[in-house]
Structure formats: C-alpha cells, structure tokens
Length: 204
Length: 374
Image 1 (cartoon, rainbow over the protein chains, first blue to last red):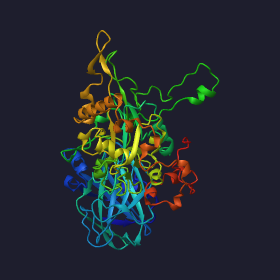
Image 2 (cartoon, each protein chain N blue to C red):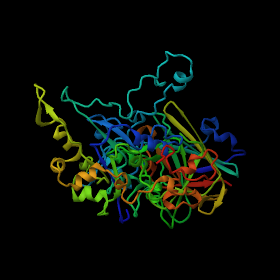
Image 3 (cartoon, chains in turn cyan, blue):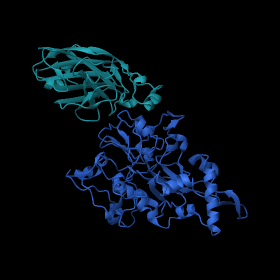
Image 4 (cartoon, chains in turn blue, yellow):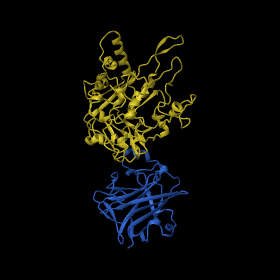
C-alpha cells in the first residue's frame, strides 16, 4: 500500500470524511485464525465448531503529513457492537511471522482500536499468547458504524522508537490487520487476520 | 501451573446454615465496594433445591469431562440478577407513609437466592436447605486453564486462585469455563473478579470474613495437610466432607458436610424410615459417596446420643469457635493494618485498598470488616 503524503492529516482522522473515498483502496483478504492455534484447550473445544473470523476482507487506505500517519480500515460488520475491534500490526525488527504473532527476536507492535473504549491500545507481541503492553506512542483512533459497515481511522506519529515499529517518510515497512466482530463474541485470538504482511511504502 | 506446597480449604456444614446471608454481607462490605462491583456477591447462599446463582448455573457447562475441557456459557448480568436498586430514600425520608419498598428498575426477574425458601415437595414433606458458595479455589482450576493471558494464578504457598488484574484483558473465558460460575466481570475496570479467599487476612492469621462472621458456626478453615486441624480431620480422617459437583473434575477445595434430613411423614402424620430430602438429590450435588457420608454421620450421632465419645460430633458441634479456624485464629483487632507501600506480591496482585480510595492516595489496606467487632 502506498501511503500518500497530504498537507495536513487533521481532516483525515474522521473515518467518514469524503477524502478517504477519493483515495485508491487496497483490499486485503482475511482469514480465520486457525482453531488449532488458539492458546488454550478450552477455547479450542468451545470454538472448534462455531463460526468466527468470517470477515472476508478489509479495505485499507493510508496517508501521512510528515508528522503523523493515518490508517483507514473498512469492513462489513452486520451488527454494531461495543467489542468490534481492529488492530494494525507493524514489524519492530527482524522478519516476524504474522500468523504466529512474532517471536522474541522478531517482535510485532500492534495498535488496537476497540469500539467501546477511547483511543487505541499499544501492544507488543513475541508470539501467540504473549501480548503485553507496548511502547508509549502518540496514537489515536476513531470509528463509526453505518448500515453494516465499520470504518476506523488509526493515527500514529511517524518516527522510530525503541521497541516500537519504525515508520518513516520515504521508507518502506510492512503491515498486517486483524478484525474482531463483537456481536459474534470474538475476542483474543478469535478473529480474522490478514494472511501475510502487506508492503507499506511511505511517500517522501 | 506451579506445584502447590500447601492448600488452604474451607468446609461448610450444611446442617448449621440458617440462610441469614451474614457471610454474604461480610464479604460484600469487605471486598466488592468498588465501582463496577455493585452486582457482585463473591459469597452467595441459595435455597436448594433451586435455581442457584447465577440462575441455573448447573446447566451452563464448563469444567472437564474425562480430563477434557468442556464448553461453557457466559452468565449475563441478568443471570446474576444485577444490583437491586431499592427506593430507600423515598420510603424512609420521603414523607409518604403509604410508600412501600420496591425495586426502582421495575419488576425484577431474578437475583441472588431468587427462589428463597421455596424448595420442593408437598406439605408436610416439603424440604429445602441452604447452600453457601464461594470460589472453590480448585486444584484443577478450569478458569486458570482457559485463560489465554495466563492471568490466573494458583499460589504455590496456599493454593489460593487469584486473577491478576494487571494481566487480565476481560476476555471472560475463565467465567465461561468455571462450572460453578463464580467469576464476575467488572465493566468499569474491564477485568474479571472473584473471591480471593480473604488472602490478606489469612496472611495475617485471620480467618476469612465469611467464616468469622457466620453466626451458625458453619465454616471451617485450615490447611488440608494439617492433621491436627479440622479440615484434615473432616475430609480425610472422618471422610464426611465432600466437594460440590465432583463430576465437574476441577477438584474443589471447598467441601460440604451434607445436610441430614428429617423423615418423611405418612398420611397419619407418623415419621417413616424414608428421608425427606431425596438421597438422589444429595447424590446429584455431592456424588455417590454422599450415601456413605450420611451413614457415617448418622452412626456417630447415634453414638453421641448413647453417651459415647465421638470426635466427629465434637468437631461438628464446634463448641469452641476458634477451633474451627486451624492456624487462622487471630482477631482482626489484633492485627496491625498493613500499608499498600509495604504490601507483598500477593496483595499487590489486586490492590483492593488502592482502588477503594477516591483520591488515589495510599491508604491502609482495609482487610478488616468494618462490621466485625469481635
């Protein structure tokens, strides 16, 4: 995905702002996290025959203004719920595997938006079930729901951080996504996720 | 899960419980006064047979079968009964003498001990008894195994099961997996919460608030491996204390002395040999071993009635209140209040006192029940 440079990011923080529709979308196919990878026997037993992670795709766009970057995510969400959520994944270093949520050598930084809570949560993962509070980063999130469609914009400052994913103008990185449908009781590892990393090229 | 060095346990003698809910209030006033805890009763007492708390919890799944985790249902706040919102001010201070107490939410459809004193059977053979319940601090805790965050810990020192609120993300798999449905959710704080077996009190040698406050001397507290203590004697030596629903396979560390039953009355009003509480109902609650337990208690009671010695009956009678609490015999008044700043890891797991204080200043840990004066 190409992250276009804009003069001022402020109007873009609104997910319903018409500017987003004028930007080319990248549709990212999603899949259910495998039940075998759920971290406890209880979750595997409970959910092995229940549908979850059925969000087929997520429409994504992004812009930056040299100081902040805004990620736009849109997906089908039939029933609005306070536990609807989306997370963007960014590699901190190394070559982390998205499906297994990174490793000690190759951790992943997540920015996690939850409908029922203000802002976004910064988390840090070194493998399945290892998610911890992440580095303090200037980030925010705003979401809307209209007629079965969820739209969320997650913003973050550009730059490099210790234990935070570097995002710099003129540089490339990778991005992944996860979506939780709150009305289906999806939480923790019960989600749909982008199968692999997508390139993220940030305009100068 | 770390190997447990010792296990604290509780025994409740159901022959003594009068359903007064003093235990419930002792717990409520001590532990669940924070915002978001209004609906919580870590200790409940229900009329049995009955629907229980949360309503119909015995049908909600969870636990294990042949060692395999079983799917469970998450109780809703409606299942718990939510918090009653009574119009006390209106009745007591409103000036209208005809105003009566009512729930301001309208017509409540459930609540803790909702079917109080209903029981089963037809007069004169109707029957019921009270069943107090807390978290069972299980040896094989389904909650702990279900949590993807590893936020639930079973303490090596005493086997108490605690939720680490710093790790908990409020996913509530624990509450689904617990077959006893003893885990609540604090929506204000986004975390699951439950009975902590009065850990800060035990650490100071003070028995659980629910046990000390019980006017019926229902509850014994102590270590399972203490041969001189009441717990070991009742569970292992005399074998009269059983876990509730052992078929859930979580190996609870709260045990019950099953209730003895009056006889059924025949049409002429004479007692029969048949028990009024159906033995099959007790078997449903406590497993097939209950019949042998009842026989042992009956035999010991008969000995006592003949004037013979019976250690079991002496234990159950509990003439000396303090004999019921193993090593936890201190009065709360004897204990110096500990400050949060000096608290050890166990206390800091949940820091109740920190969150009690609206101004977020460091205050002494309030582990003494304000109602407790003995």
